[in-house]
Structures are given as structure tokens and as C-alpha cells.
Amino acid sequence: MADIVLATLNAKWIHASLGLRCLLANLGELRGRAEIVEGTLQERPLDFVERLLAHQPKLVGLGVYVWNARESELVAETLARVAPEVTLVLGGPEVSYEADEQRITDLADYVVQGEGELAFAELCRAVLAGTPPGERRIRATPADLRALRTPYAEYSDADLRQRVVYVEASRGCAFSCEFCLSALDERVREFPLEPFLADLEALLARGLLHFKFVDRTFNLSLASSAAILEFFLARARPGLFLHFEMIPDRLPQRLRELLARFPAGTVQLEVGIQTFDESSARRISRVQHMQRVEDNLRFLREHTSVHLHTDLIAGLPGEDLASFARGFDRLVALRPHEIQVGILKRLRGAPIARHDREFDQRYSAHPPYEVLSTGAIPFAQMQRLRRFARVWDLIGNSGNFVESLPLLWSSRTPFEAVMDFADELHARLGALHGIQLERLSSALLEHLVAQGVDRQRAGRALLADHSRVRPAHWPEFLREFAADGARRRRGGPARARATARQSRVHGEERH
Image (cartoon, rainbow, N blue to C red; front, top):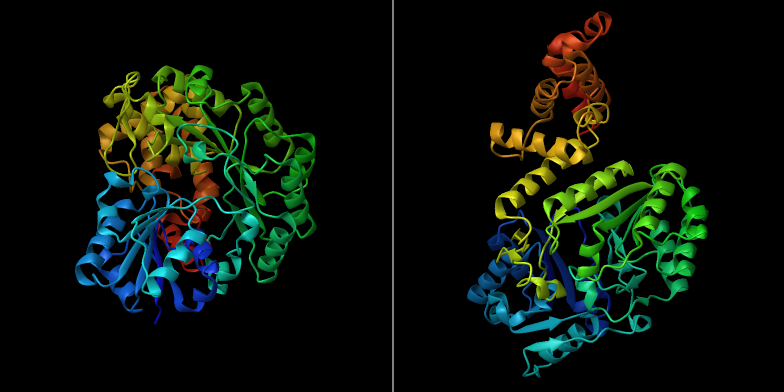
């Protein structure tokens, strides 16, 4: 039984909520009366409520984010109907702004807005003592990070073995990019470095090898970022994996030297380019030096083993399709390992809303509030961009088409080539989700040949890709491109299927 249940619906089970653990760690004397209950978007709200109420709580704190807002509303509605005696407290970014416009806030007893560790603990004490506050909206001020208890001891051993574990060395952002809620931050605040490194040491000692830093600007402070990289270099071991989000145009020599020392597969950098169009960047208050961005990406690609995950946003105010296409092609030329094409979202409270009237920005009324059309990109073009992003994930970011992908744009720009293939796939298949690798490869072969690529060259490239990704299974339509000896060694389709099944059983097949 627990008087306080801290709950949220994660996008996937593998994600472990850092926010809930921050709240739990700072409950003080109430810590022993609280439990965390995590669900996923795949769980029925009725079943999730049943799990919450199994603890017989007096108070439920529900974390609401853009990815779980709809499902959280159903949870809140069900709780209000079946257990009105339970005090429901909402928190999280989704309800921290424009709360009065959301039905879910009407279903709750209290809404804690902002960083909630200390405000939530104070509210719990008051409610459990029978002296609840009269004000339903509680605006939490940013805490002194030195006063907070860190959440890392709240991760279970099972969490450390099986789930994504998030850590944070700082909060806030020094920049004012209007599409991001961090634009509202007044400054960057760092957790005290030595205690933070001690927390990392404790996590390593418990067996954690994958660390995902949630800092918006990991490389803002050279002293802190260098100290953290040096910490991990001194403790390098097989399986260690570090994810950081970096400022694209800030990579001083000291950080270059440190990043170059990490072995392959250890460091992933998430680099938010967002746009190469300088007028669009200025319009949304995103200040970055484009030439330095390119220089830094080239250095990381050519002189380090860092895995580069980059981001572009389609639908920014005033940026048209041609400008976005130029930016995509420019980024492809820099050869990052991944290019995540995102559609602009109007997060609640984000300052980008100030451009809606001037640039005719029209957004979905439902989470995640993606832009539907702009004055520069009509709805039909935006739909094509959505399909482009999906197909690029399938053929570009997946890593399944390393040999055959360059053939796609051998005579055109990468953007044009991928967009044409996306249009063709959509016309042929309708839905672009759930496409099996073999069917996608077959469609790509037909498309390449139709675009003038020699059939033998295209087939051999696709066969090489399949041999790397699924060595135990060659699709029948690719066998004609293999040498006679290789075909005989493979033993025909039946043997390939059996080998693939064995590979799946032993967890060796790559997807």
C-alpha cells in the first residue's frame, strides 16, 4: 500500500521516467509512503487505473507530456469517476502552460506547473495532513539544484539492466529557439559537479553502461563537459554508451581532443541543426554560426568515431519546400549517420505561436500539435513532407541500404530522389508503416531501374545490403544477382528461411 502514487505513461516500456524519480527522491519524510507506477501508451487506461488503485493511494501524481496527453486525460477521467476520493495532482510540461485551455486540468484537484520536486512534496504534506491549499494552480519556481536530492538511487537494478536511464548535469538552455520550451528558461543551472560525478560512479558500480544525458546544451560549459568526458574516458569499458545533445556551432579544441579518444560505438551526439536557412533561423531566434556548424560536423565525421544523430525541422515560419530541400541536401553532404526529419510542433507555451498570424501557421488541435500547413507550405506539400520523413527513416536512418542508397540520387539531389520514391511508395502501397524489408527492397529495385540505374548494378547493391543486414536470408528476387557459387552455398529459399528462424531464436538477427 502507498499513500502517494507517482505515475506516468511512457512512450515505451524501455523508457524509465526521470521526472517521477526526481519527485520521489525529494519527498523527504514521505518517501516511505510513496511508490512509482509506470505504464505505456499501449496499456489501456482502464487497466492502468486499476494498477494505480491497487495501491489504495490517497494521492496520485500524474506526469503529463505531449506524447501522453490524450491517454493521460482518459486516465484522469477514469480516476475522477471511480475514485473521486483520491486527490489527483497533475504535473509536467504539457500542463505547465495554457492549463486553463485543457480539459484534463478540470479533472484534477491540483496542477503543479514548472519544476515540481519541492512544490509537489509541500503539497503532499498539506493534503495528507488534512490542510489542503485552496489554490488549485501551483506555480513552482526553479529550485536551487544544490538543495535537491538526486534521483539515481531510485532506479532499480532491473531499470539499470533493461531500460533507458536518463541523467542530467544541468537544467535550462542559454538560447531562445522559439519552438522549444527551453526558450522560456532564464539561465542554465548546473548540478554541483563533484556530487554528480559521484552519482555517475555509483551507477557504474551498479552495472549501468548506457547513460542518456537530457541536458539541452551539454557542451555549453567547457569545464563541466570536459570533466564528464574525462570521467568516462578514465572508466572506459566494453559496452559503455553515452548520449549527449550538443550545441552545433560550439566545439572547442579541448572537446575535439576528448571526443576523438572514445572508441567506436561509445558516444552518440544529438546535433539539432533544425534549419540551414539563416532568415528562418533569425526569425525564430535561433542563433548559430552555419560555417562553424559544418566545420564541426566534418571534424566529428572525419576525425572521431562519434555517431552523429542530426535534426532538421520542416514547417518553420516562412521557410518553403525549396529552402528545406536545400538544407536537407546540405546536411546529407556532411554525412551524419542519421538525419531526423521532424515536423514543427507548437508546444504549449512555446513562443513560436507569435508567428501564427503573419506566416499563416496552422497546427493540429491535438497532441503533438504538428503544423498542418503554413503560408509557404500548403497542406498537400506538408503531407508529402511527412511521407518523405517516414521513407527517409526506412531507407536512410535504418542503415539497411548503405550500398544502394547512393544509387537513388546518382542523377538527382538526395531530397528530390527520396521525395520521388516516397511519392511512388505512397501511390503503390497507401500506408507507409509496417512495410517489410523484403517488400521495401523490391520496390526500391524497381524504382532504381525505372530511374535509369543499371539493373545488375542496383541488384548487386541491394544484395550486398541484405547480406550485411540479414546474412541468413536472401530474398528470392535478389538471387539472380549473386554469383553461381554463392547461390549454391546458400542452399535455396527453404534453407535461408530456416537459418533466419534459428538466428531469431538466438537473438542474432539484425533489424
